[in-house]
Length: 340
Image 1 (cartoon, rainbow, N blue to C red):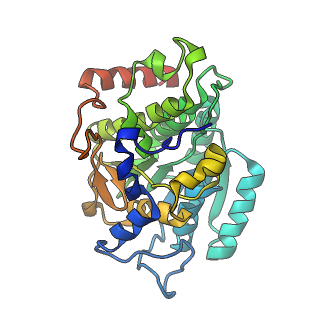
Image 2: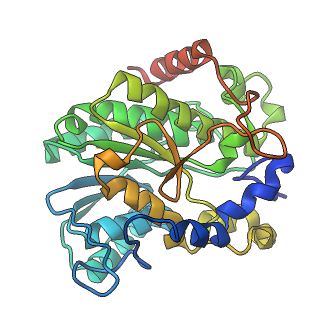
């Protein structure tokens, strides 16, 4: 049975989880400095429009056929962007694409097929994008699997880490750097999770669960990958300063992934955010002025959050902090495994 707090905080911090529920979103919404839409499908000029325009922007979103990814895809299509939906399933992706076109009247939507946990497929789809475009304005790394039992990719990599971090957040942006750097205002967003508050990034053999596969813990594998995304955004802010690198938490949103992971235990996450309420803050990260953003930060509902929490009062903790050397080691292993 999955943990009640799989994607949030460890038990001593669970009292803060209300911030990730619908209650927290509605509270944060009251403090927004600019308008927020109540739906991803509102077109420019319609009632409730937030005033955003994305004509001429090229957007790539992984895992765009359902959940948070689909909401973000619908939003940018409604705003006039050229959208690439990078998905694993051709059937589900094409169905979602047709729905988005119908809802937004934007025909400039294309499906690209790849399992981001398979590095060979990531390389292939990156080459395909390079043939189609001369720039990318925003890449959203959203795809990944949620598993209770250990699985490995065809390349022998633990599937959770491979999809969320190695292929989906490290290799894909690395391969697309030349196109991102051609944009006037490039940004990359890693859809992370409050689950990363459970841990720092461990040694590589622990992250890959190779030391003792029999002790695999799906909750922790997910947390390692999500902490890795936060560290990646922070490190690449230093290494590639032209690009805005962000990680973000959607809160507890009603998605198929949560249904699959929790089943009947989903009741412990109520009142959940709608899928759009989970995606809305990330949509703002994609579209707001660069001056409103803090590169390398971890966001929830348009605001940077602490990356480490400790104690009953959620002060800045140290247990989940990685040293510079530990981050160096993570980056070296990512480079080696990705073959860059």
